[in-house]
Image 1 (cartoon, one colour):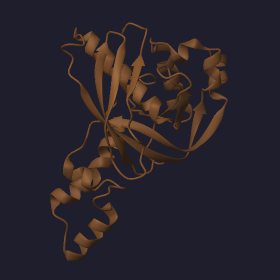
Image 2 (cartoon, one colour):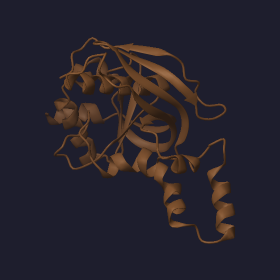
Image 3 (tube, one colour):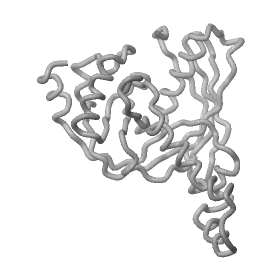
Image 4 (cartoon, one colour):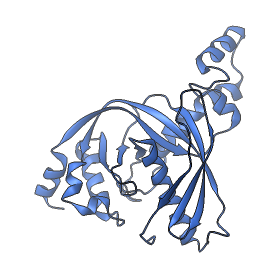
Length: 245
């Protein structure tokens, strides 16, 4: 990538202060109990009462931090190749979406890709269940690539090579992250962060089941809302034209 191209992509910065959305496997029941916003019990209240009684048992103390580790810490500490980071880059990225539907569409695409690459068809592909979390981000400075995607189709291409080069430049010169257009949800926006400093506490919002409804379709069925006032799960179907690479 030329120096001028890098400058053009990185010259626009934005401070992100928003609630974003991320899908992960359901944590253990004990860990989920201590997630902020649970209707059964508020984590801070439970921990305060238990600490007043005496030292926290090890398994309870560990459970209190398990949700944050799973939803936020793990992808940063354990780099997995994605759109803006490759296996050789040596840094993890925390991916999330600015809209709940975009988070659903992103996971639906990856679910379909895994099943088709494994040679499974709709009759043999097992459904997968994921929990949707809302997570506040409070003022992280990122490279804003939203408008750049209109003139640079490689930012939303299925070949991640170009984007991974951009990610390495951001990691080297900015260290905040990136805001960019979703390739899976029309009009959707995503976020990729390189550090945990500006990420708040995750809250469980709703549980969804993903099913391969055809070679090009993924059905998303609601299971339950996690708490009062959370996102109300509803039936959705996502259609993807591209064959997975």
